[in-house]
Length: 111
Length: 112
Image 1 (cartoon, rainbow over the protein chains, first blue to last red):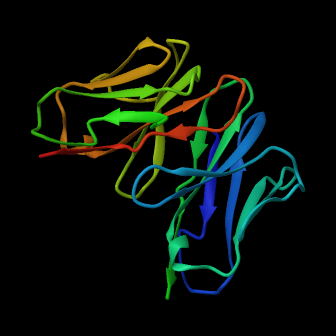
Image 2 (cartoon, each protein chain N blue to C red):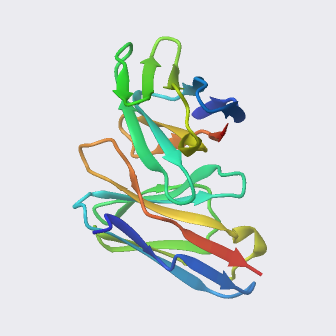
Image 3 (spheres, one colour):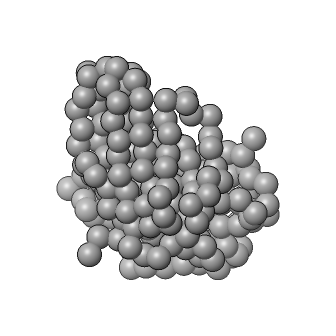
């Protein structure tokens, strides 16, 4: 059965720290991996990864995919209180329309 | 303009009632989804339609019935509501050839 596992489940850090969030997956015919940030309402899109080894970057956030070892990481440097959120990872398969979400990592950044 | 919009945003109703949640997307996407997010924030897919055709129907009680009158709309009707149906229901859409899923703001359903 396809599955997506995120770790850690929750994390508390102080402003300025760097965090690494993990997402591992087992899916048939991998197509893409998506990262989302969810604060109080809808998940908002961060990155889409389809190829191994190519880093996606947006400001203090970056992400990379390893299709051989079947995982992705999301890095946040110089964290701020506004980074406090749930970070969700989703994986999609070719030939289906299904995206499976992990349980999310709840990040809290303290001032 | 909101790309994926859901109504109502909040709904409190009694057990046994029947209710509907509506979703509309103005992105021109071909595929729409309903996801359920429980109290632990786990997002689980329920249904997906592509060009008005049901393509994903996960293990969901048959009290839940989706309907897509056209590819811009996907509604969710729930019969005989139960306490365990309390959750946030997210509508989402995706372009036929693209990969990114865009979410609506969610419909907070509370069954009392």
